[in-house]
Image (cartoon, rainbow, N blue to C red):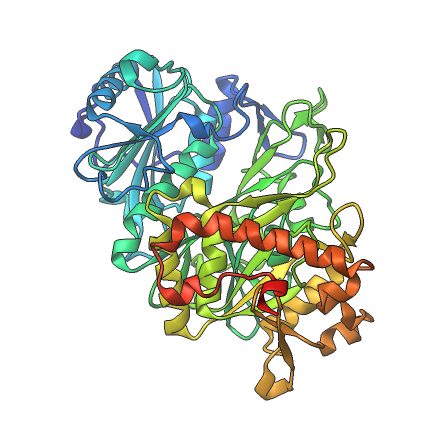
Amino acid sequence: MPAALSHTLADQGITTSATIHANLDSAQLTEHALTNGEGRKAKHGPLVVETGKHTGRSAKDKFIVRDGETESTVWWDNNASMTPDHFAALKEDFFAALGDKDALYVADLFGGSQPEYRVNVRVINELAWHNQFIRTLLVRPTAEELADFAPEYTIIDLPSFKADPERHGCRSETVIAVNLSEKLILIGGTKYAGEMKKSVFGVLNYLLPPKGVMPMHCSANIGPDGKTAVFFGLSGTGKTTLSADASRTLIGDDEHGWSDDAVFNFEGGCYAKMIRLNPEAEPEIFATTQMEGTVLENVVMDENGEIDLDDNSLAENTRGAYPLSSIPNTSEKNLGPVPSNVIMLTADAFGVLPPIARLTPDQAMYHFLSGYTAKVAGTEIGVTEPEATFSTCFGAPFMPRHPSVYGNLLKERIAKGEVQCWLLNTGWTGGKYGVGSRMPIKATRALLNAALEGKLDTDKHGVEYRKDANFGFDVPVSVPALAEKGIDQTILDPRSTWADKDEYDATAEKLVQLFVNNFQPFAAHVDQGVRDAAPQPARQVA
């Protein structure tokens, strides 16, 4: 039975004659979506929907209201602002639009799995499938918790709403406006459902640091030894693949908090890329494409209800939303112990970084603030160089506060918990992209497992380390786990894998300079130890 709202829309100042569908379950919302013509059902159970022109986030259409609450707390270099007056006009028009609806879907949910740090979020939707999506992605309260649920933050999501740039102070007909003082988020003009979950991330990323909790754009899992690992990494670095390990318990795949006593998932579901999903490489995720309760976005389906995950004609960013319970071996309460290991993933297309390096807390903060990966060369004629990408904290778009806030929190947490940090390069070896080859996945897995199992420890296992000449971090000289997999130890020393050593030195020098240039805006906000963790070209050190 759906739970009635203990705190009504009228209590929130919202007047509407719409039929209110409150806290429906997934099966009921799927039925409503089908009845409303919002989507179709696939042969094996999922609801298949299309998002229209918006197949991803509208980053340039997102605004935070600039007022007394946010003036000195929000990182305005990274976040567009909206005036309180413009927001007031937008709110007035949103409330008027709600009044005109025939039906509204309302879900009361939690953002965050640790009770002490979660927020009560109410989401009001005009589309049933959007309500099902957010109910899948956030944490679902029990019937007892719904009985006295009082919303702290409210999201109103109206894809049919068209913003007026002049009246509302925005950029286009699409708007995502976040008012942290009024605890109200207004989303209009986009059917891309991911805007809702990312808005909740933004709220938690704002609220948690003053409480001493580190919010992280990362995946997390627990080993058989009960130790937690968190994985930072930008798209294409292997974060999802490497953290999805059948021998380890998954906490979550996207955003977490790190408190004094736990790592906790912000979500109760997953939002996985589906394009060209390989059933052999990722069987657990693939299985969800044949389950009731999964929502598939922009996945192509024929008239017989058969889906084609390889077809990108609707979007390259095809997605599936499914509850964590659809995945075997997940954490019962979406949380685990505080981390023992922090893994930062990069796909270095320059071929300079070693496959694994051990980081000090200062180095970890430096690389966290850098958020480095490299894309392969573009397709234009004559473009042969890899392209460096830096996204601070491995998630700049979702960080309302200055990066140094998150970086300092991470450094404190690492030091306090004696956490071991690692940099894992899943990119190129033997030369840069176009010359070398992709790091063998079996080498990456062998090194990762050795790190997580404590087998790279000098005292217990006698593993010897050298200082990297350019980046200063510790790199193992030899790792028995590689030998066991029949992998040559030379892979640990990138320079030795290049045929042209001078070219390696020149490329390394170039990458070092890219790091240095990128870090300049952060240098004044960190202590000397972190500044000293910056790389220096080997030929200057010599």
